[in-house]
Length: 450
Ligand code: AMP
Ligand code: ZN
Image (cartoon, rainbow, N blue to C red; front, side, top):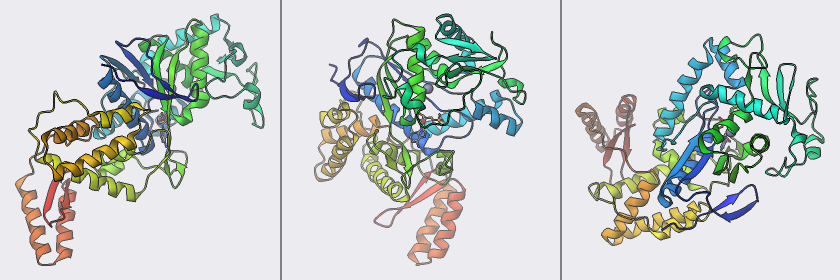
């Protein structure tokens, strides 16, 4: 039976009961990364948040179609490709692979469809042509602009009126725009751009704007009306507002996405983690430092998705301790079959309430303590089921090679002799060989693959 899900809808600024267009197939679109360099932890937060929502929807409905796009046409991509003297295709296929491998390390499920702008350029051009034909867009000097005034509901998502948007803002009124608030659907190529980033169109060589890429990819793969649209809070305006305007103007009988979900920022000292501020740390760097993807995942999961989440060393340590403790509980129950076991309501119901993860994780924590006191198999099954549902389960155990185990033994001997300098030296050797050493409370040593 479908249990009722409530989601905070940015379109109405209220928590609403989720009523999909079709219970048989839930359709969700999420704005994915712009792939000019490796993802940072802030980008990863967005991916993990929607992965949790995807898992929850899959738990509750027979089918979910999750589309997360790849932005592989963009000015930042052009600049990075020029700098590295490679084509945008070479650059983006390399970064895309890095992105996917990082997201797998963070235990995210792969979306059902991962379309990219490069693969959809012909249809993007067709959508722009439709907007021009419907007089919602105009051609000017090699550009195509969306005419904001032609769409009367503009501003519904962000609550901004055109006048407010223009007030106090220094606007570069491009000579070829009819009105300063109009935004670009198609841009002419610059001479300095690499040929790989120039596409033929009825308006000359150029490239599409970012907003129209998402309008096309969402409606092409999910239909004109779909259920959920997600992305970081920074995308609400202008990106999502413009997506709505374009899509509803192109398809006047549609309302585009029904529920708009926005995740809060991952911050560092209270500031949004971003490439432009230079306060970012990439997922790859953290993994290379030996941090487990599952520890990062727990950090990214454990604050409510709409709240800011400040990243610091303390929460990393806490997360590491929790994962180590939970893993240890489950080590004894590797063979326990939970295929038919259902998620307990104490965990599921808070999640269905706009992903109230704190309550759900508190339940998991309580369970972990109860299991120690009372070995009730049903509780252990609950615990394991939840852990797997959250994507926190240990990956298949790897055999530790003998030479590493021998080194680990040497650490034990050195520590027993209180020769901590030697123990540290051997530990560094092991780390360099891509294994981690953990000391348990009882003084034993655990070795694991990084
Ligand atoms: P980008 O690669 O900048 O287009 O971002 C990809 C996704 O990550 C978008 O949904 C952004 O809103 C989201 N995002 C970027 N920075 C952060 C951050 N610091 N915290 C949370 N989400 C972010
Ligand atoms: Zn988008």
